[in-house]
Length: 108
Figure (cartoon, rainbow, N blue to C red):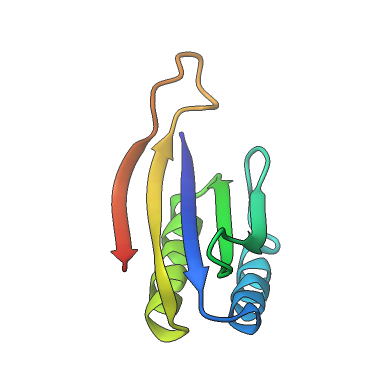
């Protein structure tokens, strides 16, 4: 079992996007991660900066910690709109089942 955090967020400014991105990189540094971490920064079709992340942890506590951080930052930065979710994944098991969302937070 692996523990995944996925988010898709839209920001007001590139500076807020960059601050968020750097905070995430610091928080996940040194954590036990499984598979490829996908982090994407860009600009959406309406010209707003966005940040997407998919990361799978070996430990549930690391997933919970990152989810709480992102959820808090969505309220503080503020993020214009977006979703962050926690998933239990069986990608490392013999019989792969679909991911199960265990908690989700949305804004906008």
